Length: 427
Image (cartoon, rainbow, N blue to C red):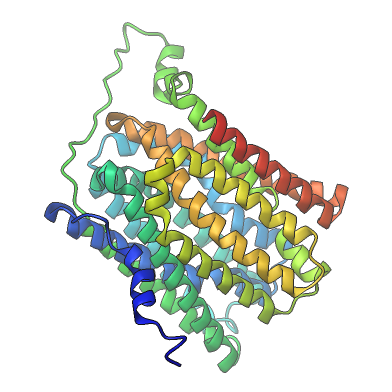
């Protein structure tokens, strides 16, 4: 036992969670609350977010309805991104983030009584309620996503972002894994649908506590007020163009935006094929799929411990590209899999790749956003990223039908690799 238990190695492994230099006193509370925020969000992710579609499928949702539940946030973001950016630009960042966090996350309470009411409101009625609730929460959720990026940039100094993102990713991986395992155990141990009351209740607790810790994050940056438009001196087209902030697309941020849109497109192209291939081709059981998910988050955690050092050494642009290249290995390995062994190995590779790419692209974005004009720039990023997700959700299945699921995974994995190389080389 003493051979396997090496306290010094254990301490050294987790020492990566500690910063390489003392954290300034003025930043400690913000960092701590940002860690608690993502920890509670991981509980939400491993409970309600992970099992909502499964509950919907069990009560009779068809594939189109399940797809709408997944696509709803992207659809709403495309509609409300620019208005949200304008709204955020005229408000203090912290207040806007707290308001939208409360408005969006309180909707998770709607899901809690649904299993109790299954006999009163049939399956299709409940599916409709789930879709509508997802659409409603996505309206303030769009502003929250953009506002949090601005809040993070204001609350975390540039030199500390790699460390904070790395720890946040590690905490998120741990709490998501624990919540998923706990909820899976609850669902196995209880009769349907009562176990989902516990799952959705735990998710609402995570959502509420995450919003509470966002409330405790403070910034000192003054809000940015866009210049007023002189209605006499400019025509209608110029007024519209200034409202849309098309100047952002022509500036240096335009190239970064294009590459990050390509990042999201390449990332999400094979996503619709993963579940179909795992179930219909590999014939994997729910237990193996669950184990694969757990292994994925284990390596997300391990990779996140190294993120701050990698970011400091190589920079976020290089890591974004390299991470996407590694993410391209995931569908390629999955496409040549014939059973659970390579599938589980693939999950390990994918988790480590995401620990690199997921943190790096976020910091790469913030590095290229002017501090005085964050809301408008983040609005264009939100539009581009969600448009890429929608396009990928359409094209991915078409490629799967054309090449077959295995061939599509290999081709789309290669596209991920080429896109990642382009970001690392020309970003």
